[in-house]
Image (cartoon, rainbow over all chains, first blue to last red; front, side, top):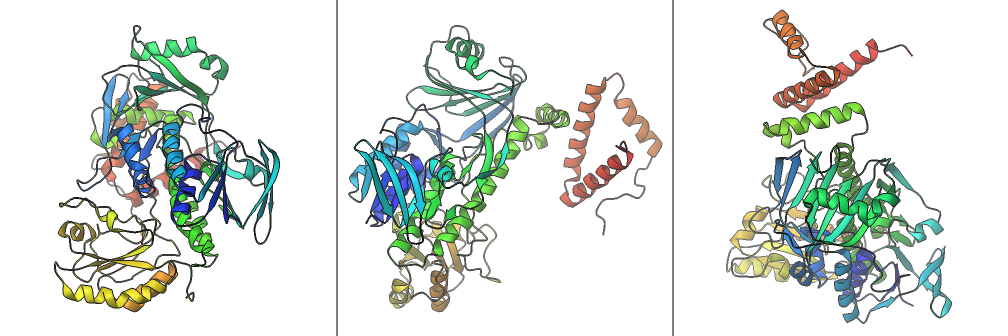
Length: 520
Length: 71
C-alpha cells in the first residue's frame, strides 16, 4: 500500500511529494485538474528560503534562470517616492531575495522533477469525493476518468488549496478575519524598460485614493494590482475595456500590451485551529491563508512541505514515533500566526478600517517624504522571511552557552554560506540531520572526534552526518571556534548548538529532535 | 514604577499650550486631525521607548473613555 496520499498537485503538494520520494517514501498524488489547468499567474514571488528548499528538491536552478531576480522595492505616495527597501542581505547569500515567476511555470518545473522520481505516482483528473478517517489510515473515495475508485492510505496530506475540499468533507473550519476590500489583478504582456523592482503606490495620480502595484514576471509579463474598494463591481472591473482604462491611466495612453490574466479578488487572514487531524494533515492554503501583500502565501506553503517531508518520512520508515508529526502542527501554526500577523498589519495600512486609521496612514505617508523615521512605518507588505522556530519542542535549549548575539540560534534556518573556493555550505549537508563540527584547518583531533561520534549518532532516528567545517567564512557567520557544534535538521533548521563537543548532549538532542526521548 | 513622566515637565506650560493651539490656526477638522496625527507620530518617534509609549497610550485611552458619552 502507498503510505502517503497527497491531495492536490499545486506547488505545495508537488514539493511534498518530491521530498517524500527523494527520501524513499512512495507517494500518490491526486489532483482533480490537468497538468496545465492552473488558471493565471497566481503566486509570482518566490523567496530566498523557497529557492533553497527547491534547490534541495532539484528545481531551483531552472526557476531562478527563467524567473526575474529582484532585491529592491519602492513605495510611492502621490507622485513621490517615499521609501525604498533592499532585501539583498549579506554578500554570502546564494540566492536573490526573490525570484518572480508565474505559478504555472513553477508547477511545470515541479512536475518535470516529479516525473523523474519513480516513487511519485501522480494522477490527474482524480477528484476526491469522500474522506473517511480511521485509527490506522484514511479511506478516500475518488472520481477518476475510469469511474469511481477507492484508495486507502496510512497518511493523507491535504494540499488542495484555499477552498480545500478535504477540509470541507471533514467539516473543519478556519478562523480569522475577512477584509472588506477588492483588488484587481491584471497580468499583461508588454515591452517596458522598467527595472525588475517591486513598485507600490499609495494614492497615485493615475488611481486616486487607492493603491496600485507593478511587478515584473518572466517572459515580459507584468503584474498590475489595483485596489478597488469594497463597493466595486467585480464583473464590471474584470471587463477588458475597464482594465484597459486603468492600464492606460497607469502606463500612458499609447501603451501596447496584451492581457494575459485578470482577476478581482478579496482576501482573508485565517487558519485552521490545528494542521494535524489524526492521519490527515493540512498544508499550504488549505491550512492557512493571508493577503497577497508580502508574498507569504505560496512561500509559507513550500515551508510547510519542507517541514513535513522529513518528519512524515521518518514516521513512515519507523525512524521516529508518531508524535513527531505533532511538531509539524506546533511549528507551522506558529509560522502561520506570524504570517497572519504581518499580513494583517500590512492590510490595515493599505486598507484602513476606520477614519482615524486612514488619518494616521496618510500622516505617515506625508511625513515619510521628509522624515526618515516615518518610512519605517510605511507598510506596503512585509515580505516573506523564513520562519524562526525558536520555541519548538524539538529544540534543545542551551542555557548559559556563550554565543555571539548574531550567531544563528536554535529554531532559525542554518545560514547557507557561499564558499570562496566555490560551492556553498549547504552542498555538504545531506538528506539527514547534520552535525556541523567546527575545527581548525587540518585538525586531526576533530577528525578523531567525528569518528568516535559517528556510530552513536548513526543509530539515532534517521541518523546524522558529521560535517567537519574548517572554513573561516563559515566560522565567522556561525560565531564558531574549534569545537563548536551545530545540530541541523533535514529541513536545515538548527535545533541545538554547543560551544564544545559533548557527545551525550548531542545524542540526546538528536533524539529529542525526533520527538523520541527514549526511542532507539 | 512608571516609565511615563506625568509630573510637571514643561518649562513654560502656558506658552506650549498656546503654541499647540496656534499650530491648528486656519485648519478645518480634517486638517487638524492630520496635524494631530503627525504630531503624535513625531513625538512617539522622539520618545522611542516602547514602555513609555504603552503607558501613554493607556493613559490617553482611559482619559478618553472617562470623558466620553455615558451611553
